[in-house]
Amino acid sequence: MPLKDHNNPTLKLPSWVENAVVYQIFPDRFKRSKTSYKKNNFEFMNWEDPPDLQGFRGGDLFGVIERLDYLKGIGINCIYLNPIFSSAANHRYHTYDYFKVDPILGGDEALYSLIDEAHKRDIFIVLDGVFNHCGRGFWPFHHIIENGKSSPYKNWFKLHETPFKAYPKENETCGYDCWWNDPALPKFNFENKDVEDFLLSVGKYWVEKGIDGWRLDVAEEIPFSFWDKFNYEMKRINSEVWVVGEIWGDARKWLNKKYFDGVMNYRVGWSTISWVADFKLNSPYKNSFYPLKNLTSKEYINILKITESWYSNEINNGNLNLLDSHDVPRALNTLAKDIKSLKLALFLLFINKGVPCIYYGTEIGLSGGAEPHCRESFPCNNKYNDDIREFIKSIIEFRKTYRIFIKNGIKWTSPEKDILCGNFKSKKNKITIYVNRSRLSAFNLSKTVSKIIFKSEEFNLKEVLPPQSLICYLNSI
Image (cartoon, rainbow, N blue to C red; front, side, top):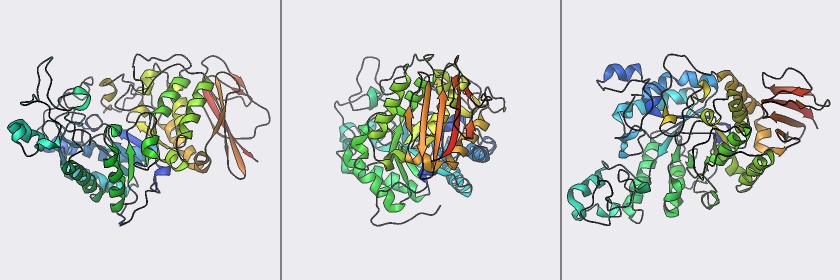
C-alpha cells in the first residue's frame, strides 16, 4: 500500500474505506507474543486475571501479527489499535513519547513489522491519536514540573497556580487545565503554535511510516483551527489516509467542513442494541451520549433516519459504526448475554451505511461490563464462551456481495411492533429484509417473496419468521 504524494489534496473519502471491516484491538489484552515473551524479562500480571485500571497483561504488537491470519480468516481487512505510544498506563492514553511505540508493545520494530505483515494480507492499520492531552511524563510537561513557570515550555499548557501540583492530594487542585479534572492528563494549549506544529508533526511522521489512518481521541475538545489543518496535512502525504474523529453525538460542525472523513457513529450502536434487546436491557451504565434505553421499532427507525439525514452520502459511508468499544460495556453484557440478540445487532450494524467495527472478542463471546471490565484478556486457550465467527464471516460476505445496495441506503418500516422490514434497491433488483426481535412470537411472511439470500439458522419454514431471527430476499424489479 504505497504512499501517494499530493501537493494539493482533495479531502475525499479514501477509496478503500467503503469496503472496510474494522476490528478494534486493545493491545495489552489481545495477545502476548512468543517473540516478546522470550526477548524481554518483563513481569506481567496473569493473563487470566480480571481486568483492572492498573497493571499490564503483556499483550503486544507481535501478538497482533501472530493473529493476523485469524482475523483475515474472519473477513477483517482493517485493524484499529487503541494507543500504542509510550505511556505509563495500560490503555496508553497517558502518552509521554509520541514518536516511540511503547517498548512493552514491542517498540517501533513491532509496529513496522505489523504494518508490513498486515499490508501483505491487504489489511489496513489505523492508529489512535491522543492529541487533546498527554501524560505527566511528556517531556515539556516534565520540564515544567521541574522548573515551574521558569520553564520555556510553560505555554504548552494552561497553568493557573504556581507551584502547581501534578500529584495533588485529595481535595487539592492541580493548578492546570486537564482532561475531566484528571491531573494525570494535562491538556495541551492549542493557542500556542508550537503545540499545533508538534502534534501535526506527530500525525505526519506516522503516516510517512505507513499507517493507513487516524482515529482521533476526544476530537470535539480540540479547537477547529487544529482540525482545519490536520486532515489536509495527512492527505498531502497520502490521499488514502482515513481520518476519523471521536465524536459521540451530532458531528455536523466537524463533518460539514470535512475536518474528518467520518466519526465514531455511536448513535447507530446504542440504538441498535437498545432495539434488539426487546425491553430486556441490562443497562446500569449511564452516559447521555450512549443512552441505552428501551426503544420501540418506530423510535429506532427514527433515530437511524435522523442520524443519516445529518450527513452527506460520502460522510455516511465514511463513518465508523460500532456497537461497543473500550469505553462502554460490551454489547453482549448489555444484552444480558443473549447471543441471538447480539447476532441481530451485528447484522443490523453491517447493513447500515458506514464502516462496521467489531470490538475484539465479540466473535467469541466476551461480555465484560463497564470500564475497565470491557477490557478483558482475549482467551489464550481457544476455549470460547460463544463462538460466532462463522456467523460474522457470513454477514461480512453478505455485505461484500450486496455492497452496492447498502451504499444506496435502506428504507425501514415496521409492519408489527417487534418487526423491522427493510428495502434496498438497485436498478434491476430489490432486497427485502425482515428482522424479528421478539423472544416469543413468530411473524407470518408474505407468500409472494422469492429467492432467499440470507437467513438465520433458526429459519426453517418459508412462511414463518421465528423469534429472534432474520430473513433476506432478492427480487427483480
